[in-house]
Image (cartoon, rainbow, N blue to C red; front, side, top):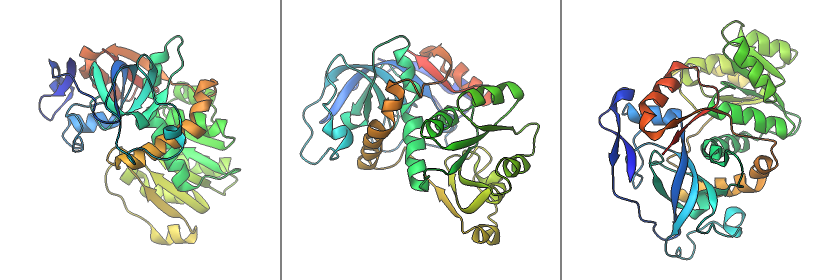
Length: 337
């Protein structure tokens, strides 16, 4: 099969399509013919040599795909699947359409995946756009759960126009929360508002802290979902309401920042930081079971949808990474084999 390999750490030009051996599904795994693969910022870090694939995962990038099941491995051993949720649902069969969470290897024509890391996709026009959802849903849902976002609380989503942010805004709105978000430029802010955000702050033209305080009558927000990282750490703490939680899921503004402990203590706040890719398989299976039960119905009934900026051929992976680095992508880019 064809796959997009990282020939050496570097810029987008180091991505190259090459032939690699076909994957073979192991116990409890499925073979999936890829219809589309989502492009994530983690893929850019992997290409640069900063985020290697975990042990056992293919060496090439790709954390999520949508496709059609074309093969089934031998049965899993007892205890290999989680109890409840996804495990309680009928396993996918050959011919079923699925959206898939991966530890790597999505930039290819075929993937293997534990059946517990799949979500059913209904047939229909552009069904393959579901490739842009598994990583975002698993990230957003698991972190909102970690933060304990409760009914009546307010969420601030940094980067509401991104692949994760556009899903977070829709999901929180569908669940009845008041949603604030940031985006860059009037046009992007308007589109984030259309996704369900109650207030959108143009970080290019407005002071984010002042705008958030104005929108919350000086109280601050209960949860900040942050993709910025170190460079925004101090400012994010100042945005928290009493008992507020800052959840760091990205490092777009750096790996290190200064934490104002008195400011955090005065708010009786907390800082949570997580990753998804390198979690144990059983943890990811539990997250996906939770997504299937609590979140996926919002996709099936149309209340939450994938936001796709563009679909590019697999051979244009370098161009996809260039677009991601330009900062102009709204939602997700997909690669199509």
